[in-house]
Length: 176
Image (cartoon, rainbow, N blue to C red; front, side):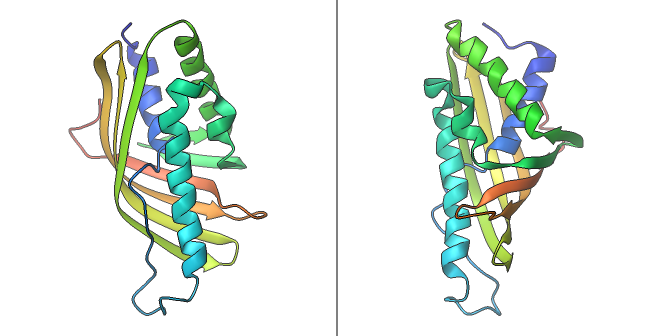
C-alpha cells in the first residue's frame, strides 16, 4: 500500500521530529568544560535520544503511540522544515500509522544519527545537535528518505530528560 502524498510529507516531517535516533552511544561537552562536569547528565540526554530512537524504530512492531510519546514534554513544540508541530500533531500521526499497521499494511522504519553533541544549560535544561538519516518503507517501497540537521532542547522535570523542542531541516534537493 503506497503512502499518499500529503500523508507521506507530514509523516516524514513528524518522524524527523520523533527521531533523534539510534547510533548515539556517547555525548561530549564543550572543550573548556572538564570531562567530569555534567558528564552523567549529558550521557543521560544521549541515552534519552537512544531510548527515543528505539521506541520509534520499534513502533511498527508495537503500534503503541505512548511508547514514543512518553519521551516528550506535554508542551512539546517543533519546527520541521519550516512547519510548526505540537505533541497533538505527533499523536495524530502516530495514530494514523497505527491504523495502517493494524490494517495489515507493513511499515518499516530505519534511522541513524551521527555527529551528536550534547551540552547542558543547567541541571534541568540541555540541548543536543545531530545529523539524522531516516527512511520509512511501506509495502516494500521506500516512501520517505531524508537527511536532516537537527537541534533539540531537553527538559528534566523529574528524573528523566524529555524533548521540549526540536528543529530539523532537510538538505535542499533532498525533500521528498
